[in-house]
Length: 94
Image (cartoon, rainbow, N blue to C red; front, side, top):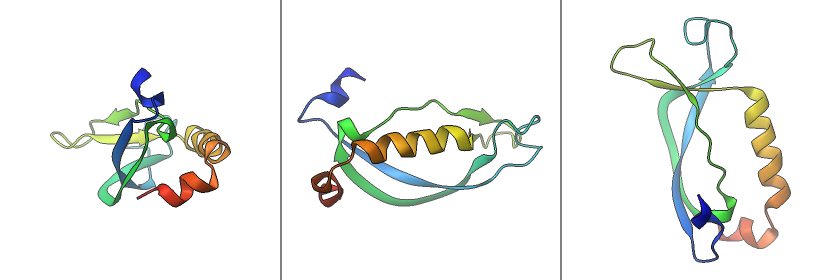
């Protein structure tokens, strides 16, 4: 985690497609989004632009675990990242 802030640290990541979660996925609907098992584009960014999260996992489908997310956390992370990114950062996301 500490290495992410180093100037020469870069991270490759792949977008995850999210869909609305159901009561079957999150009994109390704490999580309103889940991973659809579909992935999007890959990108390469400076480590300082990465925010590490540890999502809960749904075991509804045995042998096929699924990441669960909360809107409030996703919105907070989006706001935090948007406040950090510079024009140069946006131009350098590959």
